[in-house]
Length: 121
Image (cartoon, rainbow, N blue to C red):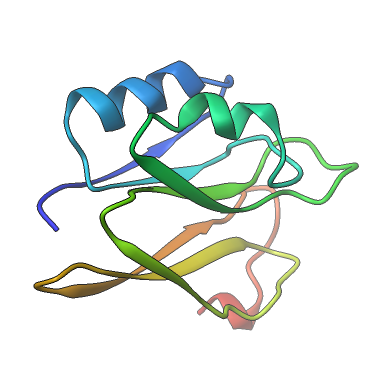
C-alpha cells in the first residue's frame, strides 16, 4: 500500500473524505467521528468514491457523534479483525491484502467525555 490517511468527520464533512480518497489516490482512508449509526447510512455512500469500498462500526443510536470507518481501494482484499466491545471507545480493525503485502489497521475513536477503561490500554 502506498498511501494511508487518517481523518475525522466532525461536522459531517463527507465530501471532504470523498475528495481526499479520490484526488490523492489513497489506498486507505481511516475515519473517526462519522456520526453514523449503521452501515446503510447515506453518509457512508456519499464518502465512498467509485473504485472504493467501506467497512464501518456505527455509533449506537441514541448517542450523538462517534462512529468509525475505513474506506479502501477495491483492489485490496479486506477482512475484519475482531475487536472486543467497549463502552469507552469505538474501534474497527481490518487486514488489507494486496498482491505484494498485507497490513493490519486499527482505527480507534475515544471520546474525551468518557474515562478510558483498562480495556483501552
